[in-house]
Each structure stands twice: as C-alpha cells, then as structure tokens.
Length: 221
Image (cartoon, rainbow, N blue to C red; front, side, top):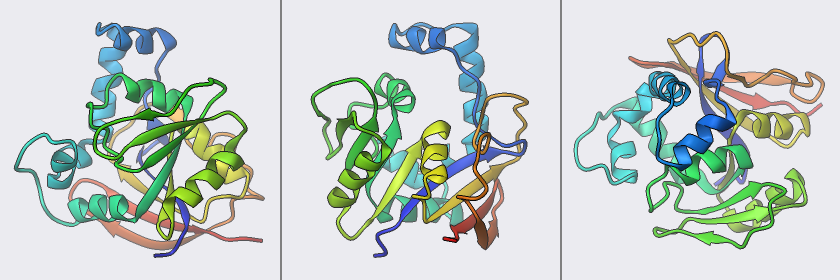
C-alpha cells in the first residue's frame, strides 16, 4: 500500500460535484419530509451518481441485495474502497449522510468529521466510527493517517473540505468520474482553488460506458 491522501468524486460536465441545496432541505430530510428543493436535489444527484448506483459492489456494500452491474466501473468502486483505511469529511457532508445513510454506514473504517461541534464518537454497526475533530483539517488528517495504517486516507467531501485540503497542499492524487450531465449551479469543486498549491499532472484517462475516469497526481513544487 502507498499511504497516500486522495479524493475521488463524480463531477458534472460543467464542474459541479453536488447539486445546490439549502439548510431548509437538510432540515426537511431530518424530519423525513420532502420539499421541492429536496426532490430536485435528489433527482440531480441520482443523475450524477448513476454510474455508481447500479454497480454490484455498491449494492453489496450498502446491503441492497444481489445483482448489479459488473465491469470496469464496478472494479474502480471496489478498488477505491479497498485502498481506503480512513476517511475525512466536512460537517455538511456528515449532516446529509447522518439522516440518509443506512444504519450500517458504508465506510467500514474510522471517519474524521471536521467540525466546530463537540460530540462524542458515533459508532455504527459494521466497523464505521465517526470522530468529531474541532481543531482543523491538519489534525483530522493526522488522526486519519494513524488510523489508516498502511492504507490510504480518502478526503470524502464535500467540495469545500476537498478544496481546503488541496489549497493546504495535503492531497497526493485524485480521480474524477466525469458524468454526462449539466447542473448550471451547485457545489463547484475548484471554485477558489490556489493554483500555486495545486499543480497537477494527468496520470490516466479511462472511459467507460457511463463516465470518463480522469486520474491526476498533485505535483509538489
């Protein structure tokens, strides 16, 4: 294993990694309600992630039952999961996931949530424990590295958290699954990027039937 820090995201053709959402939508999700905004968000997100949702590994990992597609997309999902020894995410991603992930959250490793909220670790069935880190992205990464051992640390999201790690020069490599959808607005991954801290080199391009997988290394200067 390589002990790298990486992220892996799906992106629309116009550069968005998530649809636009509002705090009201998150509150509605917590209450188990559906709003027009939440319905639109879910529809867009499903289009962006369509290449993931039908894969065999995705279905097995979330215990959705048997079946699903096999092939290179499925293998990439499994390879990404196997290399990850711990994850880091922002509070916004956690808030959305807390009310939408199944009881057995899909990470099966330690997850470090960058937040101002003080909270005890939240242990879920299946090996996922969420730890809440109040002293910055570097501290979260240091803890994740220790937990990951000789596997890699994945910056799971959302877009703002990934951008912070890129601008801090803490990412080694990343992959983008470029999906054939257009959002027009939403969470734009590279909005606010510091190009001096994120010089990149393309390492691989791999098309599939649904997306184009783009792989990059971050070059230290």
